[in-house]
Length: 104
Length: 218
Image (cartoon, rainbow over all chains, first blue to last red; front, side, top):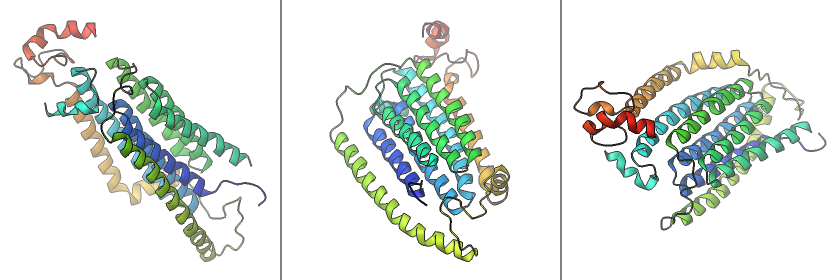
């Protein structure tokens, strides 16, 4: 084929970059809401890799795994935001350094 | 050629959104940047014949999770630039930089290694399938990734995991309800007060009297 075409490793590199950006943000930021968003970025990078594998090998199981990742991500966000609400209501200026307040 | 353009635009949206999530000071801006990344990923899902997953991605992530983030941000009133100006922990920046650069190098090197492996696996799979002409543009394998194939996989091979998923969702809902209203531990009985009362102070009796006013003043 003449010219440029999209290959699977482009998707894999993009997924790896999203994972790395999310992980770096998780280490750098200390706002718990933004840390949760960075976790979402990491999960989406992994999802992109799963879909790329599914398309590459013609196997639908990769898409099934992505569905499970979506469900687990939804549950994680719900519980995480519940914790963030409980912490930030007590002290609105709290960062991740102050999460020892979870001891109650 | 149009696929390359679609990939380039969607990948640029993903990366700009991801960097925006990490770098924006305002949590509302970070949530909107997250929406941009999620839409870019949904476009890439469509480009890889995962149409149902793309729809679920838009509905669940952009329609539910980001709205939940924005709701929490607005509810708590933390939509201000807070925390990038405070000093970093000792070695926090160095750890993050080492993770970013080292992790990026390792992952991209792994992708390059796996890509060489793919070429052999792909040709092997095509050979055993009896396909000789491996056209680069059109995938000759019978990859029918529609909703019925996905449902067949989900409800046959992964049915136990699916049931565990429902259990996980129930546990998450119950845990969130318990976290959201911890007001029942006071002396007034478990359900004597309003939802949300008693969250702003540790004293239960004071919360029972001033809970409504502090909630209105929030």
